[in-house]
Length: 316
Image (cartoon, rainbow, N blue to C red):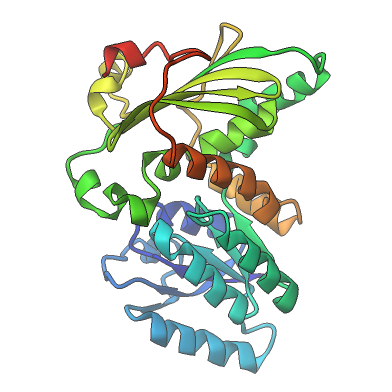
């Protein structure tokens, strides 16, 4: 049995990590969060220690590390705000635990270099959660694309709309320095998906840049991509609103719609299973999308010469 610690137990995504830890047969030894609304622990690990101060959490896990290998934390799950990921991955490595960090692994790509050095120093791995790579429909698309001629250029439209209330822009998520902006906070794993499927970036355009929505286009090795991201519920398709759905994820490849809004909840379990089996995504896999999002964040608005997403003309 593998032992886990968890940083950010009161956060939005923590229940998915708790469920994943439970599903893979792990044991949660301790969790930490400055907020104490962590009753979700009772559903999965009622015996886990909880600390509202990270200093006491750190001290407790260091004590366990010195007892024996059976008692120490082997994996640290990190569910904290984006700007804290780098520091909390470092804490995990210092405790000689593998880090499993929510996306984005870091906000700025140059922070990855030091984490890679710490991996070498400690012998522990840094994993990240790129859950879309584990969606069955997208994995099947990846296999299909690998069989096609390498010089084919696909026409791709990607849209992700997830309804968020006014709290979103007033929280750390709306602070670009803390979240990396909307392209990083809600878009990072979609950009990773595009690079994973269609190769590296040759050109990038930014067509819309607002705190609550962004749009642009990419020329990739094997695709022309038009993308649209939004946390404005008014951008949800009418069919989604009528069905009572608050999120819409759509990928259209050469006119073929691949809608994957359903079946999104168990992907964290697939990520954990891959990590424990030695197939988890780490720093090298995370780097291309983090670098791309950084360049998008620094881009000026430009004309849509690659192509503009259909939703763009409706949502300016």
